[in-house]
Length: 328
Image 1: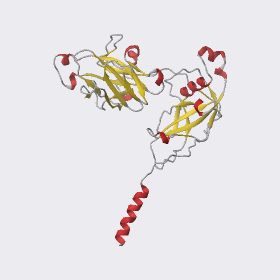
Image 2 (image 1 turned 90 degrees about the vertical axis):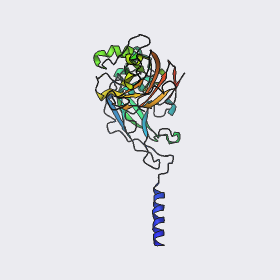
Image 3 (image 1 turned 90 degrees about the horizontal axis):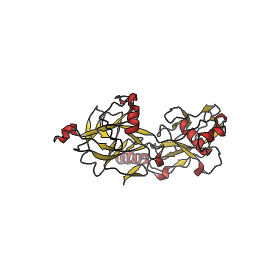
Image 4 (image 1 turned 60 degrees about the horizontal axis):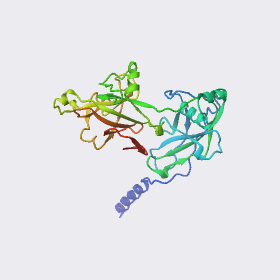
């Protein structure tokens, strides 16, 4: 009987320890320690200057992996739909780092700034603004988990530059051709000296309705290897490609590949016609490869935060359902 009771006791403890999800009811931001310190927002999208907002994880019943972001307004009484979203540079961190550039774009938007001439005419460069913030937390893919902080915090001396949100881009490198210019890449070094070549011919851009979401779309022609035209069928005979977020050379610092290994080839020939999707290795140097014997158009989508890639044969218009692309 004692042994039975002991076993039941362990079973009961195990059951009680199993996490059970529940919808959180409270979520707060910490008052910024430097809220009265003046700072100026940056005007360039590539600037990495950030400011911080801190919070604790809402009570989901267990230590969930969450995404954190913020909302900003110049009026703390404004309805929530009028607040502007600010992305967190480290989405899963409750110690949010938000680019001052993103804040500048948001404040320009909240002030209904039309263009730089309007910004100048209104003397906005010389003004200080009190910016109010709410926090947002959610478990990806679980709608009921989304919660907005019950409190509001502020930074009280924000000065802004004119900032306009333009589509960001990444680069493709490999056996590809720009279908509009006819210029081929051929694994040209992804270095700063080749910026104009890459920017004008081998860039994947954020669609206009997805600016800031780091979803990149591009249409290119695969250029066949001579060995493939001659009848080769190995991965080395495939037209190959990978991506770079910056032109820093062949180092791993800005490379997005199919594998960690340098020039490893992951063949996707049997999948890309219907539509291939797979994982990206951050800082990976491997390529994706497709066996073609003639120039072949492909449409590519890269989800940078999600480290996912989609490749489909043909030149397609791309729309999105959430972050998942649809090829038309």
